[in-house]
Image (cartoon, rainbow, N blue to C red; front, side):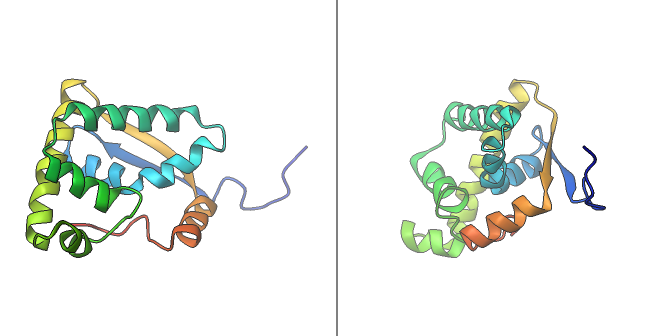
Amino acid sequence: MMNKDPFYGARTYAVQYQLDHTKGVRKLLSDRYLIAERRYKGDTDASDILIDLSRAIDMASLSDKQAEAVALVYGYWQLTQQEAGQVMQVSQKQVSTYLTGAIRAITAVFKEWEYGQIIVELAWEEEADYVAESGSNPYSIHS
């Protein structure tokens, strides 16, 4: 049966993550809940990506403060660095320092594994659903 939607396939886009660079790891961390939604649509590659990310975080030997900062900013709560600093009772600048160190350590693991670029196919509808459900922007920059 032919799809009658004239925009079928036009609302999808590819997101590239260069995992041997900190910028790509930071973006993957920011988008991980958006990628997680793909698992419920039968995308086993999304599960593999998330498993590898979890293993890389575990193998990065993060300090307790780095792990806490990653959990608060890129985890379930998706806090801003300022909000994370309040929870951690440190400055926003210190949260940024923890995140920078954590992302460098995670990137080093991906480099050791000789990971390069991964590409995830996403649909505009998934992004809209994610924003509506979570109330957050999956593309907000946490610097």
